[in-house]
Amino acid sequence: MNLDLHCHSVSSDDSRATVEQYLKWIVSLRKKGYIVDGIVLTEHRKFDIDLDYTELSDKYDVLVLKGSELDTRHGHFLVYGVTKQMLNKIDFGNVKMDSIELMKIAKESGAIAFPAHPGRFGIGFCEYSDSDLDFAQVSIVEHLNGSYRSGELERTEKLISDKGYAGTGGSDAHFVSAIATCLTEFRTSIHNEQDLVSALNQKTFRAITLEETRKPDDVN
Image (tube, rainbow, N blue to C red; front, side, top):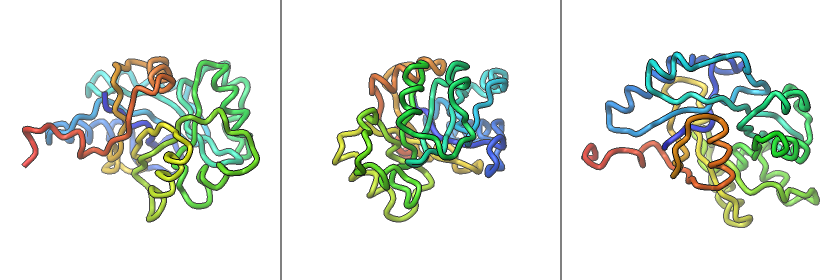
């Protein structure tokens, strides 16, 4: 399955795309021969626990899951498998939270948290990875990100090479046509957030670009 693990809808304060607009775009990509199975909404500093996208997901036959992108003292972190237990323990709006504590609570709550766009200058995990802090809990980072600027992918790939991390892919889309530019290819079927957490923990995935999903028969 090919999932875009990092995107933002109008629920985030800096995005103009609706979830339905993303799904319509994915349908159009499929008609062009690309294989995109779903998206994970990772809204900034929040988790929309009461929003249900099942009807839209069924209408367009695109899996829609929910996660979050949180600000920490050590860069932005993506969180998947958010539970009520986790929401009760962490203030998602706290932009100065301790990432080490975040990862610990996520794991205890049946979720998972790891660095987003680590190579991003100024706010990426690369800025902190060689500090004296104990980041032993980190084993995954976001590898491919559709919003990287010049030099940021190279920083990320050096981090992955140096530390032996696994890497995911996500578009970091804030507008419609950016959705699914980068994806994570899973070797297992995923139907819900719990399946996603399990596959991430098992590291049965790799980061890919949209072009890599093109069906061979559709390649000129």
